[in-house]
Image (tube, chains in turn brown, red):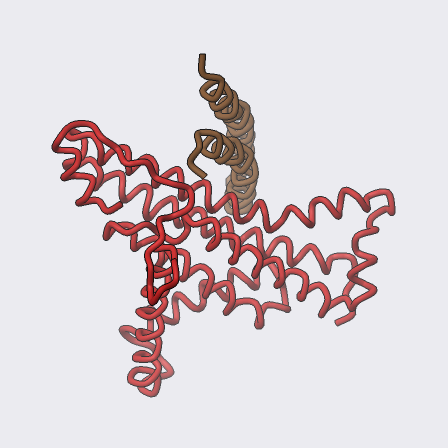
Length: 72
Length: 243
């Protein structure tokens, strides 16, 4: 019974919440672009920065998982 | 591990050599140096030689109406100047060259992955060094434009209750910048490495994925890195600057 594997799986599972949050962000940005296409540039910029922040949390989980597998 | 190395080992079956978080060290003149540092220095040498050649031979032939190579160079420089200006306003002249340098360094060193070498951005020391440089830039920007006491008072705005929140956000800036770049590049490296270990997937498919991981992801992460640096630098002067 390898507890390392269970720990790694829980650390990677954090990415699911990041994916849910990204889905909501993209959906609301698509709605606002459809509502006002002239602001598409600004909305695009804001979307990319927001996705970067959300993705960082998922990347933290990935880095911890790699460290747990003993590859530091 | 190089791509050719993985291909030859993959012919014998599915084997994948483990990619370590700390890159393997080679010994140079008696010192143990990570191989990513050597690759970074080679890329820097190539870039510096290109810049020197351009400066010595092409710069004096510039015309007021640009054509050819001058056009390309002006497009690139103007892109970074306009980008910095759109985020910082009138305070952009000193920061735009730094942004150009950081973006060129990250993109050029990650393009070396297509030749089979391990890109320096997968080394946590490299990304942490660049993140610390950006952190120093943000602080010096704030110190120059708001003064020493203005900088300290910045942590107490908008209300003094926000002091711990501002402190924690500020300290986490270099850590998040470094780990974002490192994690994305490292994930790409692991996927490509696993791909090369499987024999029937390592012909043809890595070429398509290499475009995604080595050009598209690098571009996106560089854009995010410089955007975040400029956003944090701009935040330090929004409460009223001295000059």
